[in-house]
Image (cartoon, rainbow, N blue to C red; front, side, top):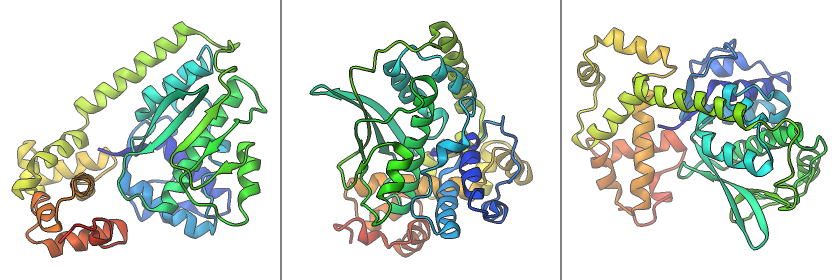
Length: 334
């Protein structure tokens, strides 16, 4: 199940409002409250976040939305994870910790700490097939901005990375904005999204480093993630949907019965978790469709595996999710 934490979304809302845009109507379209408790750690479904970012770009007219994301987070924005990151003993420790626990913040992307040929970098990989380019750009902007906010807090307030690569194409006239935000000219149209480090500074001891405090907060993060996956009804329903999709038996009534709940109670429990049955069903179907496309399955077979009565229903749904017909993403589809 792909999600973004409310903590992370809240910073994006603050960035949107810095353009003098009222975020409430945009959020209302997706059933998300504007005045969220900043200490809540509930999650927002992937599709909701992506639509929010698309609407944010439309409302601001800024194709580089996300560049200022770091301005709207505090080191403690991400709760126990933020404190653990602040307690890192050096930048290598920080990078490894952020990559290991990034799912606490979001699961639409994953982070990995890599090194080769005398270079070291954090690579940002999308976990979503065929992510809309404008949404992808905003998310990568925000992740890099967030990382630099932490690094400048714990290491050097003027820190500028030696190299940044982005898969996104260059937008004419925006180069200086990236330099102003990141401190480094971005290499666009690269084969990966990556923030590079000078290996010589990776192991410089940090003044606030505290292994004990870092580990204590890591344990809190681990307990939270374990509890979420065990107790959160939305995760359980999502897993149940993945199992039931090929059978086509994925109605709301069937799922409510499976969890021994009335339709009203089922609906209310999912609402409390920040989602709905239809959102979970759409997300499960979209995520599985991405996997099947990578396996070069035909549209007819994919529609069957996702529980659709015919391929035309799947085609309409896929176009609703992505704005594109599925055949444009899978040349071998028939």
